[in-house]
Image (cartoon, rainbow, N blue to C red; front, side, top):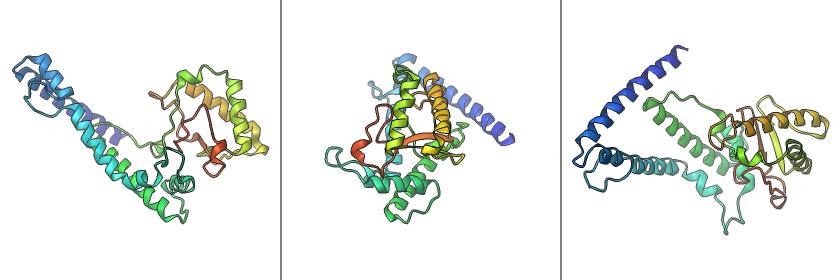
Length: 237
């Protein structure tokens, strides 16, 4: 609690400093404060220079992508999206969660992605953002709550369970739950909870409100041609 309070205090202080800096820079612009504010969002058309959000975002993203290069290079799709190393992609996900898969390519890629995430986290903390680590940063899932609301819950659960039976997707839980024919009731209970959280959009944006301890993801060891899911992003492990 003390550490959390310290981070919030730092955040307030850095925000106040940044706001004063923004006001001073806007007021000093030769074309007036509106032009001054705009020059901090995008490249200044009046060429008075200075840092802006657009260019800085590109620099930061480029730095993080270079850090995660080994992951991207090894696992990006090829042949117009028809070819991908599904097995090592899955192994990299397991490596990021501390499991030794014996897959050298997966271990290198997992290390690169973890380093990029850590770099982004430390940068945010240094900027005064009181952010906490989340386990699902490692492999985010993308859900569109508005889209899923168009489907009835029973229909969605039925479709997901059909894919579970075929082995094309899996349910993973931090509590150690794994789906099998013997625990269909537990799977249905979990799917009910997942549907409610996605459609209520308790998360931000398209992250869909899934808690850290539960997720659905395509089973990359299954036949890739059978893994077409209308609800999930199939490129997200």
